[in-house]
Length: 223
Image 1 (cartoon, rainbow, N blue to C red):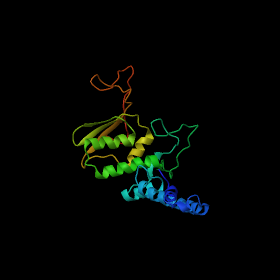
Image 2: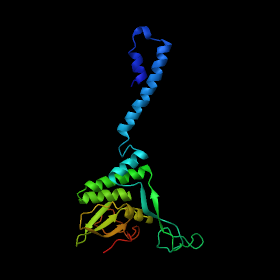
Image 3: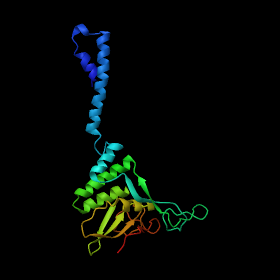
Image 4: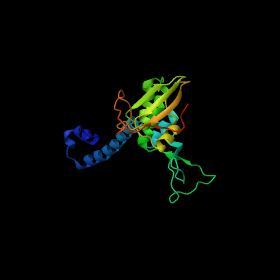
């Protein structure tokens, strides 16, 4: 593909061919035109979620009302007990003071922020079908397998085909982008290792006692 400089030189009349002065003028003008062309290309292409970076994504976030900063998304490390997220032992963790929070905010990098922006837009236009719910959960948890089960009284039992870490759970709660219809609640959410979960003969990919692992119920959801 020819540059602006090459195109201008290609249109010179023959008497100006190989003239150093006019060639230098065209080179200088062509460089400015190339820069201007690149700016217009960036305006056209980088105002999109998949191609934008930095401030461009922040501006998209302003439009869809979703900040790059997610409040109370990550548990801090203090002394605690085994079942507490990010807890440390006596020799490694200090006690949390009464005036200290145990959750901190996080600022998303561009790659993760793109996912959140798409999820926000998807939630805003969603009709809350089962496919919509599965899609949103698969993006939030980066899981290839999501299962839904109706358990009565307008409640859903959700299965995440990936072992969820404490950080994943708090991040999910903080972004609040799970899609569900109005009046429909979440009965429980479980996470499991899709390749090694214990189950029964009629369940796809299930393993027996000798190789299967039990699923974990995520805290904060139930009844």
